[in-house]
Image (cartoon, rainbow, N blue to C red; front, side, top):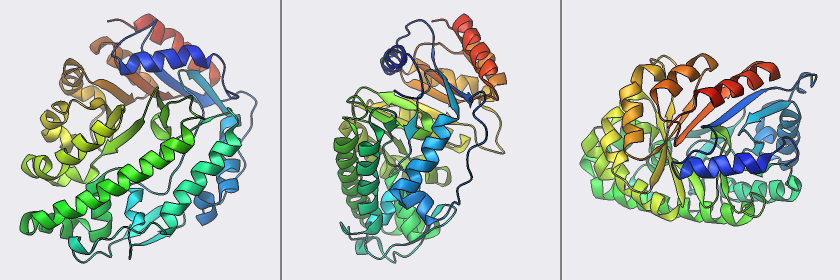
Length: 350
C-alpha cells in the first residue's frame, strides 16, 4: 500500500475487530495532515468532481498524498454518487450533481417504481469502480458505494411525507417498492464487489468509516427512521436489514441520530449486524453522554465504531471494552497522531 506502512499488522487488527477480539490494542484510525505536504490543490465541486473518473482520482490521490495514516487508518477511494444512491437506478427519477448529489421527489405511487439498468447513475457507479480498480495498482483500496438504505432511497423518490403517509395507508404497496429497491441494492453491491475485491485483498471497505473487512462488507442504514415509530421500523425496515445482513459477511449499521435509540432493541436482535457505527450528530449531545447505550451495544456482542474527538478517546476507552471497539479520529499533526496512538496502546483493555 503506497500511502502507509505496515498494513499487514493493521489488517490483522481490523479482522480482529470484526471477531470481537483484540491483538495488542483496540482498533483505531487516526488521520492527520502529512508533515511538509502543503495544501491540497483546489478542485471545483461540480458534476465532474463526482462523475469524471480521472477528476475523482486526481482529487483523492492529492488528498492521500497529503494525509498521514496512523494506527489502522488506510487510503480508500470513495465511490460516492449520493447517500441512498440507488434511488438513481429507477426510471423517472430526477437529480442534480453540483456541490453534492441531490434527488428530487418524482415518484407518485410506490407501484410505479421501475428499475432502469441503463440509468446514468447505475452505469456511472460501475464505470467509476472499474476506473478506480484499474488505477489503484495496490496503492489504495476502493469503497463500496453509498447505495444504502432502501427506505431512505424511497424517501428520496417519493418525499418523506408521502412515504410515511403511504406506510400507513398503503403498506403493501410500500413493501413491494422496498423489495424492488432491495433487488437493486443486491445487484449493485454484488457487481461492485466483483470489481473491487481483487484490489481490496479479497475484502471490502467503507471509505468514510475507514473500515476494512476480510469478506463481503458494506454499511446499512435507515436515516429516515428518526421520523418513524418502533412499530413501523419493525414492519418496514427490519426485513430490509435482515435480508442485507444475510447477504453480507460483515454488515455494519450506520446509527445516525439519538432518535434511533428507540430502535436499538430491534437492531441488536438482528444476528447479521456485526457492528453499529454511532454518529455524533451536530446539535445533539456528544457520544460520551450515551455510555449506557454504547455499553449495551457491546454487551449484545456487536462491534462498536465511533467517530470521536481526540479529547473523547480516553473517556470512551475507560468506559468501553477495547474488544470490538474501533475509534475514528482526526488530529492536526503527525506528532499529535503518534502521541494519541501511543496513549491508545496504554488505555486498551479487555
